[in-house]
Length: 340
Ligand code: KG4
Ligand code: ZN
Image (cartoon, rainbow, N blue to C red):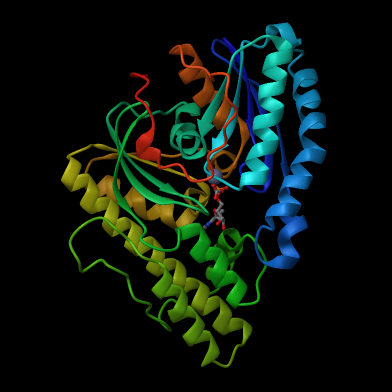
């Protein structure tokens, strides 16, 4: 089975062709970062318009690169949600129309299921069941994964997502978007002993998290400081440490609670080197295993959507007649597909 994957939920147009036997045949990604940089975040209307501009040329490009004819595509998977309504509509409309023209089935994919399955694209993959920490610009979830499609949310952020906290912190410090990679780079120059930021909700039982207070802490620290470049780096360091520490503590607790031996980390923030390092250390100390995607599959891409689509279409699922995008869509609402 050969699947064309389309991702347009936010500010990246991601297209890929994934073949069940041969693996990834071709992929293309257009990032709108420069388009939104001046605004310090994604502007939804600009995002949708740019997806409209990019999507068809990118599909033509991957079809050519994969030397693939339309009749060799067995299904089309597109991100149906969660995400920005206008942006989702572009991918869904193109995906559904192509499927209709090429006479193949289509399937709407949950963006976070795409992220969750991205580590499966690597040599070293987890077996079911496992614990997943999904950390992106819109979500911070601890998920008990017992089967593909059977996702129980056992912990989540009650306010800002981790990626959002990185982005907002960067904005407050006058840095550009997306904040995650910039903060983590800057943190390397930060003093390790100047600031100590709070680790939110670690002293309370349970697996829920909160990052908006940390953001306020950053703002107050920055406003009351000399606002020098060194202070900026020191704050970046202290902020990242607080986030990484909090996530590590919650993962440790969730692993204990589930009794699972495997931890998956995915989503944009899983590209963070410090977070990976700390979770690998945690795993080594407890004889557990950690799995994560290569950096380019941590952030949004079409490959993870094609792969999730392959699993769902292979299991006999496909879109009905209706046309639906779901901007707000709890991951726990998905249907079980089966085992890997
Ligand atoms: O998964 P993703 O590409 O898009 C969403 O589904 O939201 O995640 C984007 C988020 C942004 O908030 C970005 O700042 C963050 O991931 N991010 C990082 C790093 N790379 C991307 N955060 C921390 N460290 C990084 N290296
Ligand atoms: Zn994402």
